[in-house]
Image (cartoon, rainbow, N blue to C red):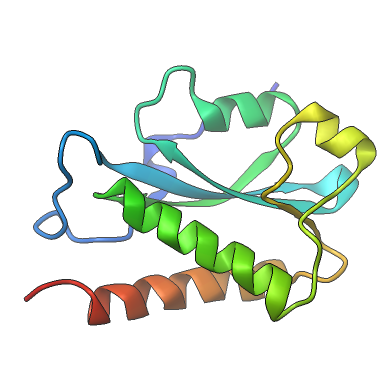
Length: 140
């Protein structure tokens, strides 16, 4: 069994002085996971201190964490997740499904086959999107 994701693997997506969320929009992690056996990639958003820990649950069924990004406001993480999913569907013409019993019966609406998706391009796309978003949307 894999160990839970260590906190230091998270990369801040915002500075601590920007985008302080309200009580209903607390900080969150955007995560990118890989399931090598099924050549699958998954993106998701979870509360930073969720119970049960969503990322740990995914790891227990075989997913491996590629990278996480910390957001001070959950809706910003969710917006970026939607942006990545839209890119996978429209620009890369990839269906958001993977079989193998839908990767062991989880919610696979955020999972794609790595046959058409490049891990490096996805990581770069997320990093560039974060940079663009916070360059153009954060109030000065």
